[in-house]
Image (cartoon, rainbow, N blue to C red; front, side):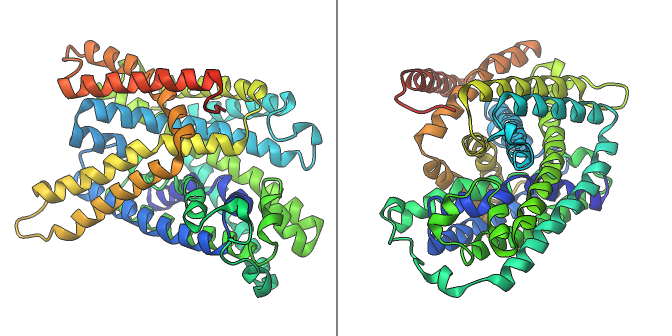
Length: 468
């Protein structure tokens, strides 16, 4: 892959459904001031993560598959496995949320699709899932070219939205309840800021896309360039969409909008054709993101299977070099969760919160590994300054831990339920390679994870904690 394809993969991975629902998702729990603070925290934290991946791609060119490889190199096989497992969970659960929201958007034209979780929507999403599956089987490079075209097509309507809404922006609406404290349901500024954190994280998931495909990059240096270009492009678009919308409709009005809420905002400015445009743009965007994330979801367990972190069957490729086995397993899980959404009536927002929380483990350990390299000097030239990279690594780690706190127990418990079964596959892989399964610390971590997973499953079963 060249720079253009890698950059498109980063942007295409980040710009999916999230940006089209930002007005409602952000305003649901926060006023304009908290939204601005939330974006500021996210910009600093994600920029630190960008620099982490930029630095690691340069200092550790031998490590492929991004976040999971860094966690394994820095903190051992069990942490590395859980980073791969968590990234994989985030990717395929995220794909379920994409499938739900794309048919929620199509319900504007076909009401039977409802909120994307009716039987008609699940049937349509299943067809889309397997069409993409067979497209990828034709070859990763061909799928990446399609993704490049789709990325250009979905960015254009977002830029148009920002331009139109900027002209219609009303300062008095924006300032009407600037702090959000006029609405007791929103709580304090701190609570409002916390409510934005998983939303802002969700729209930036994919920033590591070029790192995940580092083994397929034509030039290693393009990985860092693509990551930086993707980050700043998306940050500008996201901040404009969420903040300009607060100058069109009040916080309660935005919070009550059906997703994709960008459609409701543009409809308030230009009339019904605005809603039609955004709903169509969402469909194109999500199909592109679905493609990007199916590529990413299949790549991580594939590489992990090839290097012994996960069972070897994940590493199988077809004649075109496509990770066919991991792709099939990934899409079977997406299919299963689509059926679950039919019976559990799972919403897009619940699914993306789970996907956001699941990816925190690989993000945290990527930052920690960058800090560790700076502290030990590994990968640095003699006399080269290490203070800046160390601070950036620590900042990225602290940002990840802050997100764990902001996520709340419900979503962390749901992630524990999804993480715990992974231990079976870790044991499988270690025995397959004739290696010692656990060291003492790893055994303690595994036991704790199983205990939390079992407790979380019990709590959700009894209704003490909500599930999907």
